[in-house]
Amino acid sequence: MEHILSLSYGKDSLACLGAIEELGWPLDRIVHAEVWATDTIPADLPPMVEFKKKADQVIKERWGIEVEHVRSKYTYNDCFYMVRGENKREAKSNYVGKIYGFPFRQGPWCNSRLKLTVLKKFSKGTIQYLGIAFDEPDRFHNLSETKKSPLVVAEWNEQMCRQWCEENGLLSPIYTTATRGGCWFCHNQGIEQLRILRKNYPELWKLMLKWDEDSPVTFHADGKTVHDFEKRFHAEDLKLIPTDQTFRWEMVIGELRKNQLNLFDSGLI
Ligand code: SF4
Image (cartoon, rainbow, N blue to C red; front, side, top):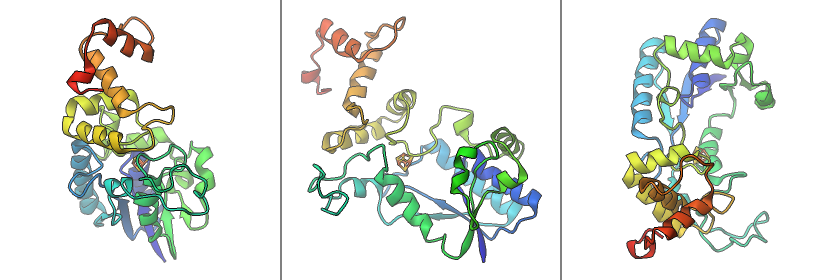
């Protein structure tokens, strides 16, 4: 039976390599589910793409295993524009006949279609190693006879995982810089990461705005769209948002109106 490490390049996932070594457990393959935004744009931001390359090299040299980057035949963009069919679960959905657009927060299609389906192929008749740390008991329900965590057995907590990664040159930039781990277009990311995306990667932000225009599902479950964030950041650029008060969305509209900025004419709304 093959022993496979499912690698995300996060600290717990990478530290599994150290715990496996300490426990003397077998390791045959290392698999990573790679997501692509479009046919030519990866879901990772450039610093993360670079880090993965470096980590692969370290792993190859030290463990003699080539990390297998597997991917769905679809990109995020492909799935985004697929039309929802009528199935049992969605029979009464208002979205039948429309494109998927942004994933819902609960049960997002991106995770199941672009990651889980791909990794499922490797789960049959194998032992899978998962990066669940010793101090994450709320995730222990994911473990079983065939899904094991070397970190739990070796009693490595998250802090120990981070330290091991640091000492072995395998700490991802997501822990030391503002680089985002996971897809740059993720609907779950925080405001600061969206702000950085818009500032540092305007071409990717442009694509987000295009998706936002086409999506029947709002970017955030509370109804906020990418265009709402665009207005907020634009108002921030113009120093129209008071920084000495807690942010409220009314500030964006109020301040922009007060300053008589015609955003309709400038194409920002
Ligand atoms: S990181 Fe976000 S966008 Fe990417 S697969 Fe996970 S939930 Fe979806």
